Amino acid sequence: MAKTDWKAEAKALKKKLKKKVEALTSELDQLRDGVVETVAAAVKPAKPVSPLAPAAFPTLPIIKGAAFAAIGAGIKYQNRRDVMLVHLAPGTAMAGVFTRSSTRSGCVRDCQSKLALKAPADAGAAIVVNSGNSNAFTGAVGDKAVAEVTGAAALATGVPASRVFSSSTGVIGEPLPFEKITAVLPALAADLREDGIQMAAEAIMTTDTFPKGASAVIEGEGGLIHISGIAKGSGMIAPDMATMLVYIFTDAKIAPAKLQSLLARNTDETFNSITVDSDTSTSDTLLIAATGQSPAAEVKTGPVLKAFEAALRGVMLDLAQQVVRDGEGATKFVEIRVTGAASPEDALRVGKAIADSPLVKTAVAGEDPNWGRIVAAIGKSGAEAERDKLRISFGDILVAENGWRAPSYSEEAGAAYMKQQNLVISVDLGLGRGKRTIWTCDLTSRYIEINADYRS
Image (cartoon, rainbow, N blue to C red):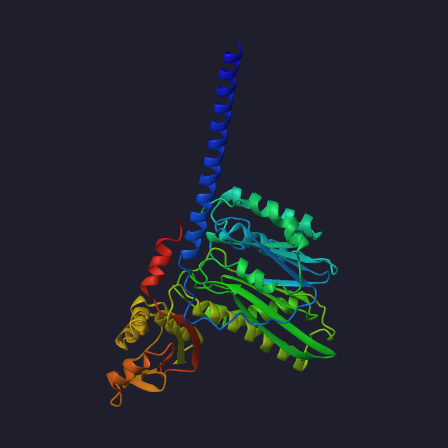
């Protein structure tokens, strides 16, 4: 009997030890996998930052009445922030401009309809943005996602849903996993802070290689007025009434109608004057919020209005040019100045034709002063042009005039100029007073790599 008990006890012990070994083996496997993932993440090459990027994210002034938070929700990217929330104080005026794409996203349509509503004077506002998925061309499912996200943000912030504006950026045609956003909104609302704008700028990036920010301060009547803005954009850049995603905040006291007028008036020669690849996004959104928290008097007319508009335009242009400097694969920043056109519209046609030409852009990438490609772009633009009145310059170097290459031009001088990072191409059509400046970048093989792999 004792012998039988000993055998049973040994068998049970063996079984117990086997289970323990299996558990330890499983734990060891998990630890090994974790180490492998950690090492892989450590040795994985970091995304190269654009050589045209600023040295650092700028120090932006605090905007009283605006608080920011950002978090990682794992929508597409791992181990990085991809959702941001902004809470805006009661009395905030809102304005915006958006893409005119006929396939614009549900977020864009929702923002447009909400801005058309007359908000109560004491209404606050909120903005919630995700990266990794644009929620565009997703039908009724996309509309439901917008409603779920804005509704959850309203609950988290105490702001009416009619005053919650949303944006999404990333892959087109994929349903937005909105439950990942709604799940983190309470934590975002609990973490709101006035100095969190840089985190917000990082959370809205997709293929961007650096966060983008710009600011201005002016003297108002009775105090300072501050403006701070952030933007995202790198590819699919050919804005049409707005740009990629841009959010500008000011503590100015200003009526919503006047704010809308200033924004619309200054969009054309800032955000609508840049192009990376001639493709207009389905999600282009530019929102501005004025919290009214500055001690300065309301911005209405006179010198303060002029100063405020100039400062706002400066912030818009700075952000727009940063988007070009972060163009996918860009190594050159190109300013195209068109003068002497028969009309401003013709000047824009010529500027965009040059800026969007793959032949011009690849010549710039290869540092090849192939000015014949500029001539071809002018000719195809549809603008009025006369061969013998054209003048083309690279910086201060006169390249062509009187219908041919300028006698003073040398290929060596042109080639040396094209090695610079910041280039100016000037075209004078000699026909009128129309003028326009367009900003673009070169086209490199890196652009193809980024976009060939973007979805997969």
